[in-house]
Image 1 (cartoon, rainbow, N blue to C red):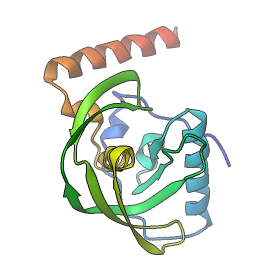
Image 2 (cartoon, helix red, strand yellow; image 1 turned 60 degrees about the vertical axis):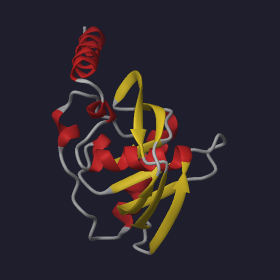
Image 3 (cartoon, rainbow, N blue to C red; image 1 turned 45 degrees about the vertical axis):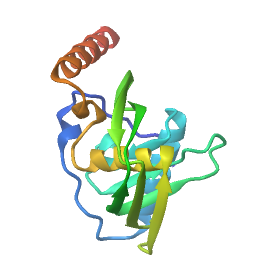
Image 4 (cartoon, rainbow, N blue to C red; image 1 turned 90 degrees about the vertical axis):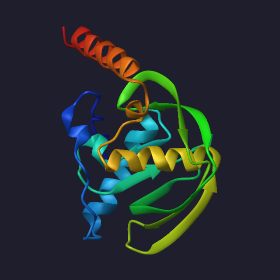
Length: 168
């Protein structure tokens, strides 16, 4: 397993749309293991492959407090949504920024595991929000896209300034 570098907004690679996974092999298993290690080390509760510059439809999530509920979704699709909930979100690719975003409160998701076996998840609350957040990454979308243009501009400037400070 290896830690991977997480891309930070406004890196244009975060806007690329991920391709479906068609080969389920040891390389995919290694990718998933690396993603979990990277997510836990960050620390975070979700990570999409696109955030580490791998343009495949793979996400990993663990919303448990003890890191004992890892969930990997390959080629996930939301097949049903219900309700609406506003929750404060943050993102490993948008460090230090937290804003309220409105999303479906309950989702049913169809996906494959790392071995290519199909399964479904029905969930609500934090896990539902996290799944939707990570699936947005697979479409090249960030949680800040849900915010006003003014907030987006402020966040972008703040992150660029911080990146410049770290680089000098």
